[in-house]
Image (cartoon, rainbow, N blue to C red; front, top):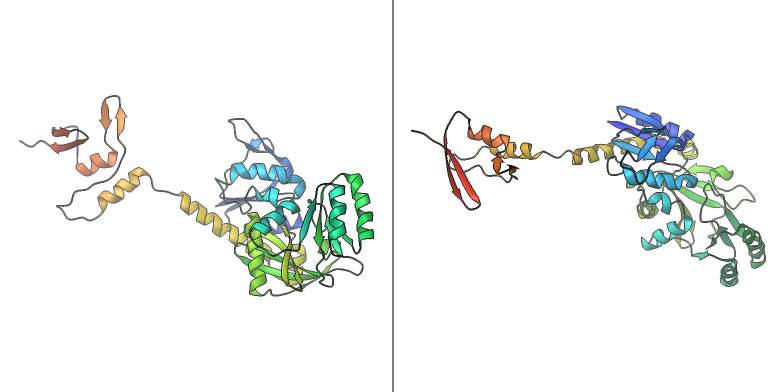
Amino acid sequence: MKAALISLGSVSSQWTIEAMKKYFDEVDEIDLRCIEVNLGKKSEPVLFEGEPLKDYDCIFAKGSFRYSGILHSLSLFLQSKSYMPINADAFTYAHNKLLTHLLLQKAEVPMPRTYFSPTVKAARQILEKVNYPIIMKFPQGTQGKGVMFADSFASASSVLDALETLKQPFLVQEYVETEGTDIRAIVVGDKVVAAMERQAVRGEARANIHAGGKGKAITLDNFTKKIAVQASRAVGADICGVDILEGPKGPVVIEVNISPGLQGITGVTKIDVADHIARFLFAKAQDMKTSQVKPTAHEILKEVLEQDKPKEQKNEFISQLDFRGERILLPEVVTKHGGFSEDDEYTVHIEKGKLSIKKFIL
């Protein structure tokens, strides 16, 4: 089987490609920046370096939020032909924190109380009624970027003054006290294959490894595993990272990342996450390929006619007739099984909607 990984060429992508080579017969590395999608044309819609993209049994497409549009577009065209672990819509939903939280709420996944503010005026009204401290963050962004901490109305107002110049909407979210820790779980299919607890460095509210956080391997309880998988399902991803806080009222999901880095969690847990991903991709691609291989009408008819049946039982089957003008051509399997030959003569009995053919014997 053939597979491709479409990405920006990160270390995590390279690890995944090497792991995929252990299972697939052929694995191609495709630079997302060299992909183009043609709309409104009858020619091949997805091109790589100007040429039509080859056919693959599995395509794993991933990239940052800046490429969500192209990822969404190419997945719409390709997901009916190849197994793709990320649904096309997920590239829009998961790369937007507002949409992510809306989906989590719909799926009844526990999360912190969250407010969306489209204007500064509306934001000030929210800041006047929330309990502090709070988290303020942009709808788009990864690796903890665009996340701000405010411990009072005064500090939140100062952040708001800065945000006003950017003319961007943002989210206000209740702060869950965890002493600077959070959990990153990697979901593959219906399982959490690895999990780590991250501890933020002193003076930093974000526990992300990219922000200097330190990690340690942990084993999640069944409930936390369940909500991690639920979060993955909610956004339409078979492979993703789920960020969780262990608050006083239990675990809550704060973010879903459909292009998670593997270096940090692999180094901390000593689990070969890339191999888990590759094996899952291969199994799902096999399942999809098997389900798509449907027998032809000829094969179905042949199988029916070749079954052992009592001699007195008639061979019957359902088939469409091939009309050539005013003539009808019988399926090949019928002529072969009936022993019909153009050298013989036949009697034909006709009624409306029914006919029978019998070899004429003197």
